[in-house]
Each structure stands twice: as structure tokens, then as C-alpha cells.
Length: 80
Image (cartoon, rainbow, N blue to C red; front, side, top):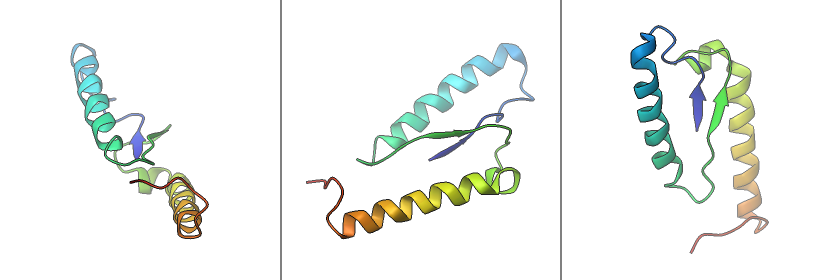
């Protein structure tokens, strides 16, 4: 899962901490739904990661494809 580093850059400082905490909690729950789930924070980006940092998206997609290929070949951990 990709996470934008500057999602709440425009929020008031007094609100930012609560927003970030809620987002971190939600993201942790989403990542925990997959035995191979990971969270990747992408610097210098807004919510539009694919526009701001397309290379980061390509990198993560390629990693996921390699993981899937390894699992298909029996190279990776299997869930029961």
C-alpha cells in the first residue's frame, strides 16, 4: 500500500496530528488484511501519488508482480 507523505499539508497544525493518527490507524488495518501487506511512504507527494511520483507506483507494482511470480513457483511463504 502506498501512502502519500503530504496528505494533510494544508491542514491546520492543531488538526494535523489527529488526522495523521487516524490515517495511520486505518492504513495499518488495511495492510494487516494481507499476509504480505506492506506500507510504503512516498515522500514529496500528495494524494495523487500516481501523478506526483509515478516511478514509486511502478516500483511497487513490479515488486508485487515479482512476489506473485515467486508465489506461483512456490518460492514464497504461503498462507493457510
